[in-house]
Each structure stands twice: as C-alpha cells, then as structure tokens.
Amino acid sequence: MSEVRFLTRVLPDGWVSLTEHVPQWTGRDVVVTVEPAFPRRSNDQNRWYRGVIVPAVAGELSKGRDLPLSNDQAHHVLKAAFLGVEQTALGPAPRRSRTLTTAEFADYCERIRAHAASEWGLNIPSPNEPEPVGGWAQ
Image (cartoon, rainbow, N blue to C red; front, side, top):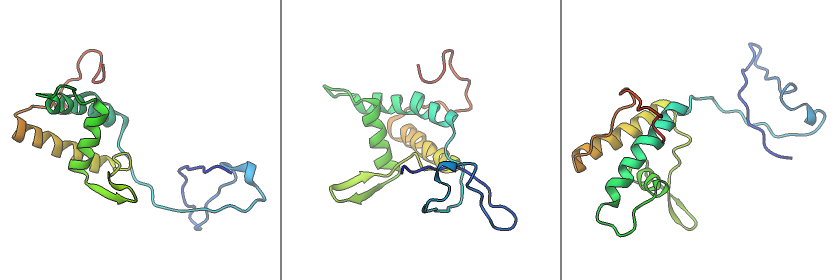
C-alpha cells in the first residue's frame, strides 16, 4: 500500500470523511495521521527563487573558480547557510526548503537578498519588479 496525502476539512462534528479519497481501501485497516495544513511556498515564489536568486548566487560564488557552481549546488549552499543544517547518520545535511510556508520562504529569500547586497554588492531584483520577457527562469 502506498502513502496518499491530501487536504481535507474536519467536519463540524469533528469527523473527517476519507471514502471519497481512498475508496480502494474501504474495509481495510489504514493508519491516518492528522496535521494542520499550512500554506506552502507558491509556484511564483519558487519560479523567482530558481530563476533569479539561485542563478545570481551561483554566478557570484563561481567567481574565481575554475569550475563554476551549478544552480543545484548554489541552492544547497543557500539552504545550509540560511536555513541551517540537521544532523544525519552520515553528517550534517541542509534543511529542506520545500516545507517552508509562503511567509517563511519569503523571509528566507529576503535574508539571501540582504546578504548578497551587503556582502557582495549584488542587487537581486525583488519579486515585485516587472518580470522579464520570457519569465524569470529562461
């Protein structure tokens, strides 16, 4: 049996209806975990982060290097620097950015922009600036 995640609303009487979502499991034992929903980062935020912030930082971190950092490498550096790390059995690993709320992700991006401006003199455009023709991620 594979895991299924979905958003549903608790009914006024405290019940949650699952039958419309997983009818193939009717009559079977299942484990249900309930957690509060929170707004995850938006697609627009992600496009701006991946299309503007990460490439700008990758370019800055690549200066003076024989082999430039990829966008994925820059993303991992940013996560470790601005979200911190968690300890794993194999050592420290950057925290995940995927689970951030829209507000947390906006704060994360703003901290990166502020660092880039103060430490490198790099002006990373805000998401409120007009999107270039062809979009952020080109």
